[in-house]
Length: 206
Ligand SMILES: Nc1ncnc2c1ncn2[C@@H]1O[C@H](COP(=O)(O)OP(=O)(O)O)[C@@H](O)[C@H]1O
Ligand SMILES: [Mg+2]
Image (cartoon, rainbow, N blue to C red; front, top):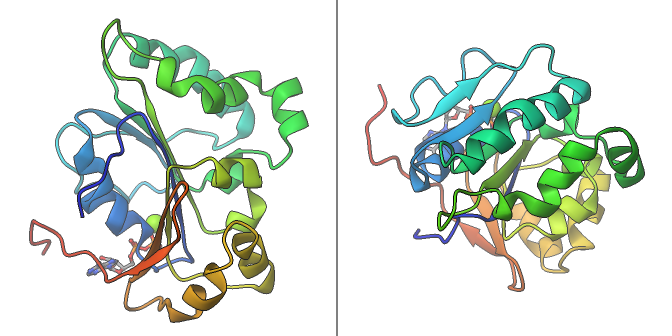
């Protein structure tokens, strides 16, 4: 599937084992030259392409993310050294409350609003990706404003309500997702969601 993802907001959700990391590593990250990924999992993103920068933010906290964006993400984007920033386990470090973000973690908030303007002159702005097991723990603002939603198998009643509020077709599509099959729903901003078969890697991973 060919996607327009440069400078965009991307949201990936699914329970453990549903295929979020595999999809991000084998598909999404290939759309960028030098994407930066933060994850608390040391074993993840070890097979990503050579341009991918992986950082194990420690501690994996909101405070630290706010500082990291100010000290690294924004300056690197403005120097043209990174073209995307992906946040794994995003619900762990991004507060659900917009008020809290604005008051105490303004750099995180600023990034959500302005990332596409963080670029070198005449260059492309920063794309932003959030990956989460618990989309119901994330503010709908992040989800609704994403240009691309990739929804893998999910669990929990609240989760269905959360997504059905974004588009009614999620009601019929969510039950078709299977954690072991790694199929997913793709929703583009302004369009209806559609189900997709699992992607196949271009490379064989042994
Ligand atoms: N499209 C796919 N084709 C083949 N194997 C897959 C696919 N998606 C995921 N897997 C495999 O399923 C397992 C769980 O996937 P993973 O991406 O780690 O899930 P998550 O990040 O959602 O916890 C991994 O062993 C992965 O290699
Ligand atoms: Mg994972």
